[in-house]
Image (cartoon, rainbow, N blue to C red; front, side, top):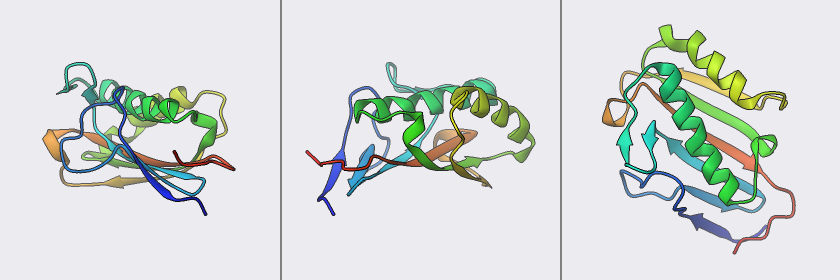
Length: 134
């Protein structure tokens, strides 16, 4: 197994707590949960669940892209919603974002609250065979 490497990227929002954007553990990249934060202004997107979901997915993709990965490398997704009545609207954006890619395994969890009053947070795991940590 390769060494563990902790990753910070400039293309994703600045973390609001003490953590890395992602960590390589061998060939697996574990991405920290992303919030609906605009990476340019570092402010929360406060619009609809669709707008928040889109921003979260774009933040995750920015970290993946920085590490030379894409949506086809995602093997597992965990999503957290503060209101399960948003489930269908979340799914519409999620499915469109992944497009024709075979969808990864996923869990969706209803929670009572998220940092900053966000309605959604998503973390994921990606896999790149024969990855070598920097």
